Image 1 (tube, rainbow, N blue to C red):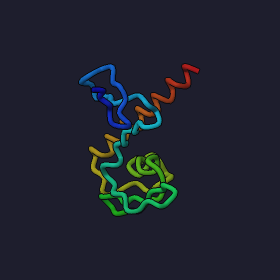
Image 2 (spheres, rainbow, N blue to C red):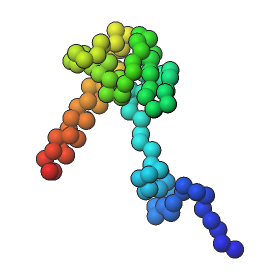
Image 3 (cartoon, one colour):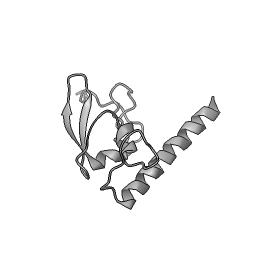
Image 4 (cartoon, rainbow, N blue to C red):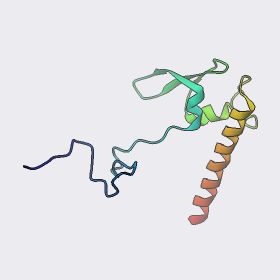
Length: 110
């Protein structure tokens, strides 16, 4: 008797690891840290999302970048959340610093 794997699950060479498969067409990106502080209110037919801040109820149409900027006092493109705690602002500043470090490292490799 031949056993068949369910569709979408490919052979994992590392049993017990959290990697399900290596197919880039079916891989899912990890959600960024800003999603913990927002609720998605609407998603249109093109995939554009409308989100609402849990702290101040400000509504955004846009990307994760705008959501992170909402918790960054140094970014003037979006109004900073007045209800954000110091912990949240610190978490987002660490995340922004991590992204900038990765971008610089990628630029150096070119």
